[in-house]
Length: 359
Image (cartoon, rainbow, N blue to C red):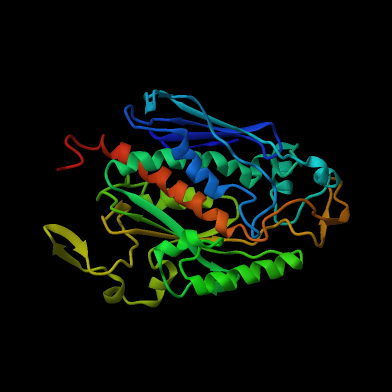
């Protein structure tokens, strides 16, 4: 089972949703980077369960412990190992699902592939696994900060309600992480309405990366576009990835979609950014813009038709504690995966030629 991502900056996550603990091992972090557990915990707190009325009430503090790779507040160059212990596990709600496949989940595909599965919350297929991704992303951000890279994300759309205005300071002021305060209120109302009906909503998360060094990416097969797509599609519930104008460019002519070049303050820039900061699989230096489509939460407490491991039809009711929309909590996960990609490529680029990055 694949549980690792990256080449030089490489993370390996482990643990199950209802197991005793979750963890991640991060290899390739350069020595000499100041790192405290608080740096990591800040991002984990943005991802954790039970943070508002629009998330699952499962009460996990997700406290990180650094087991290795940091000494006297500085990275040593050794693998960094992190762990958190599951403290609010209730597997009883899953006993009636031991032999049936939940619609929208990985129950059937895991069972078909491995002949056995962890029915308690989905095991490795659970979004609890993203704890390690976000923890690694916090470290990736520290690496990227040394060259001025900044990453932030927000909920572009939830349940068909789209942010129409943009105020970056507004994103963390509301519980759905929308940059539009009016849209945020509508999103919250929509989520609470479907929650009362035992249903769920999906949406779109948008992530930006600023000040990315020109040339990040590895043609031909490790294009930055491809690695971002890989990273984002590996996040649970993601069903689509769009970079820049994405599918909208199909409605333009070449003369309209091309980003014309200019020079500003001695640097090559583009007058527009339809490409989303990427050309030929390499970063252009313009902001990288990524959008991901997040499906509605599959666990809904409504009767659903399914089959069991004996191929017999069954009706099930999926109980337990689930997000009525995972979109707000998907924001820090998407940010982390973009950071993990860019940190890895930054370290790889340092080996591409002598004297990179140029002064």
